Image (cartoon, rainbow, N blue to C red; front, side, top):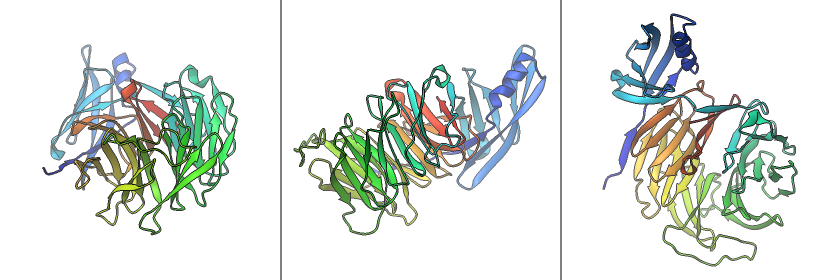
Length: 401
């Protein structure tokens, strides 16, 4: 069976388009307009949409190649662009949003599993935790990183945060009081990614020094360092932990390991190679070599037996049980900077340019409007638990869809 190949267009739409519609609807102005663009591969179309009243109804009229209508829900648009063969796509506005006050520039973020808190890290070591509701009434500043924060994430409990940065440090934080009970030292270059095993008694850190390290949280002990099996200077850029698809369980090698018996570790390297390990035995079980010279992996996610890999402007879905060819390749006209899967065929993409896109069952589900170009830095997908999908902008905004 040949792999599926899907080319996905992207959109850029005026972030305030809902305000334009609201002003016309309320009678603040009789007529206004907003801009909209779409691009796919090396083709693009740029246009405007007039908004005006006709009796009691608000009417939208697209120009320069666009057909635009209000969706059934007041926060959505239905858009077509015949020139790019784009028909009746859904563009959504956020259902809610958070204005982040510190740091002003976001490099990394996470949403707690319970959906109550968020954590953000900045370019100068800034790190803070705040409540999503109550206008951030609960807030903690976490001081300790010396330079840019590369990753921040919640433990499953939502009460503890793990962070890492360019200062080679990995830090454990209490969300309740902001204390830093543990700092993990051992990497020789910047830490690029973090991952958690089960409830978080063990954690993993990837670094530009070429290693992925396995730690025990209670004591801060370094248990094991995974190195590139080809012994070449590759940097691990992204990783994910998942349950073994084959049901095999093997006892761990150390009494300091917890919940590793039935887990896999998937690592993506800067040259596009992927290595898959047994976390308990530390043996490499499979690999997916890169077939392109320009295929730096930016993100990896794993759901059940599916691996979601972002390589530049292409994202691939692989089946762990058969790693000969990807099940599907999704091509976007802008590099992917964030990926979050919620099912075996459902994934959200944040791209360098254009609105984020949610892709499900081999087609676009909707586009997430509300961001200026070149601002989105990542995505957290909480759809499986009913929390929605969150995208963060570098300019200090987090939006939920």
